[in-house]
Image (cartoon, rainbow, N blue to C red):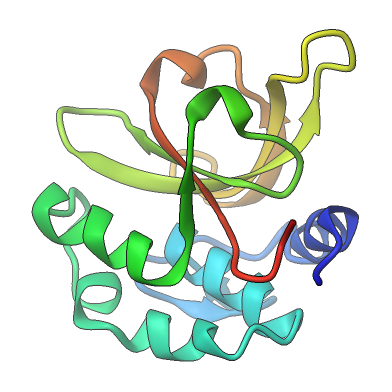
Length: 150
């Protein structure tokens, strides 16, 4: 079993890594998919490298096709209800009409249990950061859990 705190701790070690579309290398360059896969691989999740090599998660535009994006996410991660998203889970978001971003939940509100901070490879900032989700909440489409996490 993988501990949720270990997911967040590993994701935090990626902070500052420059953002680059379809990149996958810690401290060199990464995008949001690369961050999710890289953290999972570092935690020993065997399917992570195969998932990152999946054409739907490797050869995508900046606004992926939801008909390919969501099924590819669900081949690797378990979908969970948005209300159940918690520490270490992955949120899929849209900043336009289509889904285009994945991020780890790094903190939750202790009173309500809802996500309050994310760790993500954020193109607008140009690197992996941890920040609040107040603006992003309305854009969250789905929540996922890495394999082997209770």
